[in-house]
Length: 347
Ligand code: UDP
Image 1: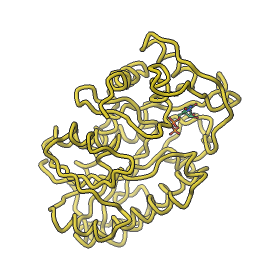
Image 2 (image 1 turned 180 degrees about the vertical axis):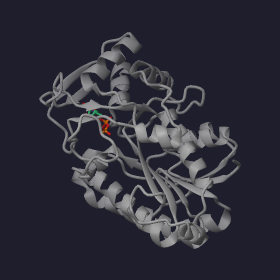
Image 3 (image 1 turned 60 degrees about the vertical axis):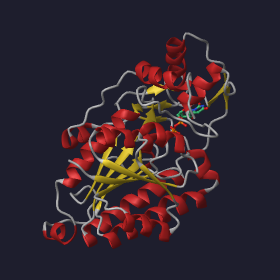
Image 4 (image 1 turned 90 degrees about the vertical axis):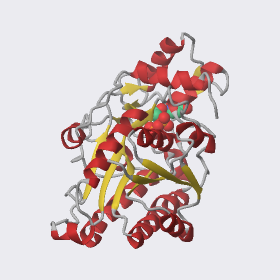
């Protein structure tokens, strides 16, 4: 469907890929971003004709203005602080940006009568897994402030469904990775903390040698296991979620339809997004060495605070209810797209 989507955080890594996917789908994205970690260059590359409104979720007036100026059908919300380690050291930043910021967004949406939201959530809402693969039924017990902040928002979304007829889909990402070759966009953080970019920067010599955070976990080779999912596959799931939201009534009409506050009921849906495949840090290093044809310089250091040993998704529900399936499941293919970006990094 043709629709206007406010993309909060659209200048960031995943957000910029989303903006490109929305344009390809015939939607008109409007970006709201404070450019604290995002890049205006990413917007230029992803969607040169798209409006970029520079603003902060903590600025309620700025949010109000954007809803007054544009006619928005739905919101996609990628603006958040998202580093586990940082969240342990600076939890106040996480609660302010991720919780208060999102509450401000919800207030502005309600005021403007915009009641459809796709929210970027995370596997970190689960904490330390008690099952081999994590389904949505897994206990919610975050072990770091980042995960806690996202879980608080999910709770708010459920309450907003019951009281205001807000319809939302929270997508619980596992490890987003890769880049859009054709789009000239990719992952660029400063400082970079994520595994695959750090490996590739170590290979290229544009970053320091990799430090592997801990090799004494209870995993096959002692390093952490993660489920890496291609950024474009994440975007596909957002489009499916958007379609689902656009097809359903919101507000008073939805309340008559029987929306409840029960998380997972039709008002506030949530889905895991992962490949269902776990790779250790060592395996990712080995795959990157094969993709790049070069040695990956690394040393082993201590564990990083807040890191669970293993996070692997069961995304059956997203497959069933969103009709979603990842297209790039192979870790080497994911790394190839990241490598194409990093070896010719534009911003
Ligand atoms: N990791 C690492 N060295 C790095 C960056 C990450 O060993 O320089 C490990 C990290 O401890 C985790 C995995 O790689 O087990 C993925 O980390 P990343 O920060 O990419 O994503 P997260 O799992 O925190 O969302």
